[in-house]
Amino acid sequence: MSTSLQALIFDVDGTLADTEAAHLAAFNEAFAQEGLGWHWDLPLYTRLLEVSGGKERILHYWRQVQPELTDIGHGVRDTVARLHELKTAAYERAVRQGAVQLRPGVLKLIETAHDAGLRLAIATTTSPVNIAALLRQAIGPDWSYRFAVVEDASTAPRKKPDPMVYRQTLARLGLPAAACLAFEDSANGLAAARAAGLATVVTPNGFTAHHDFRGALRVLPDLSGVTLAALRAWHAEAVHRDTEPRITS
Ligand code: XBP
Ligand code: MG
Image 1: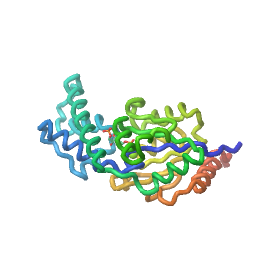
Image 2 (image 1 turned 45 degrees about the vertical axis):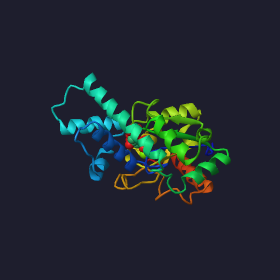
Image 3 (image 1 turned 135 degrees about the vertical axis):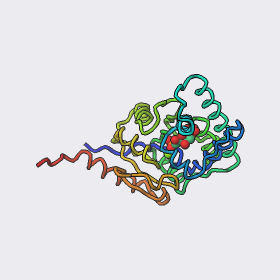
Image 4 (image 1 turned 90 degrees about the vertical axis):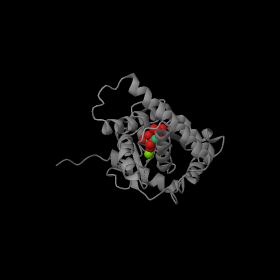
């Protein structure tokens, strides 16, 4: 049974675009606005990225700086939500001012794959506002026509490495994992995609280059020069490997 490649599923942050520096600046802007005295530098943020989700990351950090913070009640949750709201607004402003560009090869692959009839989807931890700000800026106001399915923080509350966002994307595409390829940039993302049964191409970035990418179908510096023919060949290799009867001694 040959399973042809029918869909490409893209992560957003760190994969479609190198967004984390802009996210970091936005977090710090929100902390300053609230007079919190918190400031995340690059090494700290690189470590904090091991926690998927902006709200989850803020709470994780708060617990680190205030270990006695045990009662995560309404007060704490409201403060985290307010900080994340301010951060999201700051991020959206920065993206609209051109702070973030798509990574090399991304736009060409999206356009080529879409024109070739492959279905495209997004499976991300971030919010719909951030996705729209980035893709409206990079592709145009009609960006959403290219994506058959968009799953994000508003639809998949259990964040990567939980496979929820990928499983929901596959369900809405109505396709088996074997008919798709995922694109990711982080160990959490790779783990989520693999747990959903997806062969995954990884393009690390400055924040994730040190992550463990064992189990990835390919690890590439970026998507420039990646053709549909190459993707179909890698996909066939993955399907063959996953359907090859295991020789047990
Ligand atoms: C990566 C994340 C996100 C971003 C910040 O998302 O973990 O939390 O760092 O965005 P992706 P929010 O799955 O696209 O790599 O503050 O909106 O969570
Ligand atoms: Mg990512």
